[in-house]
Length: 138
Image 1 (cartoon, helix red, strand yellow):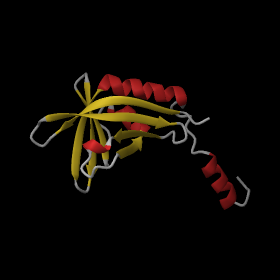
Image 2 (cartoon, one colour; image 1 turned 60 degrees about the horizontal axis):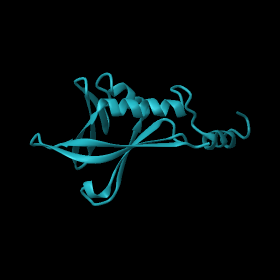
Image 3 (cartoon, one colour; image 1 turned 180 degrees about the vertical axis):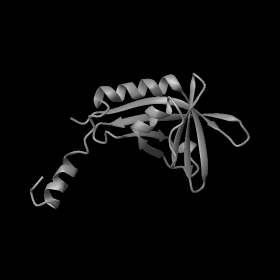
């Protein structure tokens, strides 16, 4: 059974000038892709007017709630006791969003009720691909 969790939340976009702009976002987790979490942004808050999703490792979110984590296109950093920043790096620049840490913890805990940490599988498609690759000898 493929369960998908969605948790609407708000974030604050931190501008280069240090201003904060409230934007809506949806945290999403799908059991069919158990290693990843997604943050969906509606089209009215994006530069190109298209709905946008950033996908990154669930473990990165968990690590970033406790200490700075990530070196690639997504970085997660605690900011005091009540806030966590998520940085999205792209060829056109960096977007820094501030989330309420409690919201992120609540979402992460919900994902663990669907697929416990360490119990993620890569899915039947990968298993079948390996069987095919190795001629039925897995």
